[in-house]
Length: 638
Image (tube, rainbow, N blue to C red; front, side):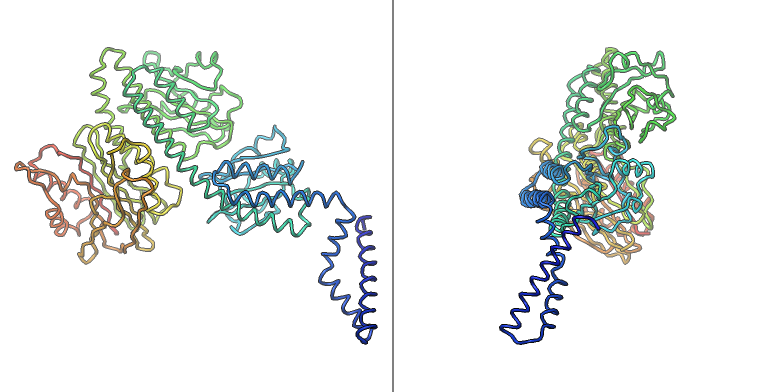
């Protein structure tokens, strides 16, 4: 027994005698009952209030302990109040970080927040600066077996954190995890040395801390959604700026520098370089860079197949290295680098160069960043091609050729190899009326039973419409892992266009999710031609519920509709290029003719039904060039 425990017990004993004496006096003088009742009462009092008495005594004996508990309680109460008024994501994280520093004093701790599919380190204190693994990102599945209502994980072996990282965490005193719950997932993790927490034996403070855990996780997740929307808008604006730069300048160095600067404002990489292929030497030469020692990178000449950049020239595929230390094809320039991505600049099936980004964090380049970089690489490829054409004295011809090849680039953005979804057959077709198209479609696979189906038509023609089409596709695909409802995704796309395009421009759009395991179709229609749902008995239903066109009104609330989608049902979605196709007499093909065609052919396989519609339109227009873009997507519950 410790000295402190001995004194606590002694004082508690003396207090018991005093209480017993008072109760005995009460019974003897006022209520003539046997003394045994006084003893029973004192035992009951001690049984129910023993811990409270001991807590009071402990605070009287250990004034330092009481001061620490009071300080912790005050900090948590202040945080609790401020969280009620905090809206911005960075404001919430700052409040949490400041409070952790106060309540844990010199106790090592680290705080991670979920973004996409990883937990990123946003705050830490009293950790060894050389412990690189602690500062690494954790994949979401490290706690996939932990119930969402869990408030404390006392043993790291309950998680799927690697043994190497577990050892480094334990060596640093981080032996316990406190999860912060969001709406449907654990949104943040606090790692700390549980044995040094000064309030863990104080019931009131512990309950207050648990209250903060439950509240802060929800507030963090809500505020992160606003940050995500702002970031998407910012990314879109940067894409537009780069597109305008490409159209206004043919100076290769100037454009590539601008692309890297734009990327750095979106992606917090630690170093980046754009290499261009030199056909004469068959080597990659540096054209623009950030974060490297200029004296080294300017002299760097990579052969095809050498390093990650040389590797993507050879394979024409994106190369993502989550940990460069174990990569076979990695050429070290910076010793601090831990992860790297290399993306080929492909134009007309030729590799013109490579964009290479490096980070000091492990596994930094996730699917979302890859998608953003892919779009920038397409723009960079067009820029390099245009500039090279200008350099050989073909400025006017280069612009025309750029549009032709931009159509090829644009077509690559559309899905041609459709994902495999259980019991679902899909086909689609896009025929531009100009060199580039303002129509779009997309098929997104969420899992083997769930697919997202989208089709849209941008106002206007040519390059501006094609840029808007690209922006909508980028915005849609960036929402792939957000698990939002159909109407929420369309709501975000609407605000994205409203903030990014000039007044008067808009796009019609239809988006649906097919749930094959529950035979349901959930959709919202933003002013698009109503897709046709043909039931297995031949009954036809038009899917028109939703709202106005995209980009017309900010914060417009769309609504979604749910319909049955059973075996034998067929969904046909199209753009107005089908129904507004003109014959020699300037008469439209029309919706009635399309409906009649579908009634007579809907039972055919999706590929044959597509050919029936396209052939009918072609014959009606006497095989002339379409006056508007034609897009068609057909899905059949097999």
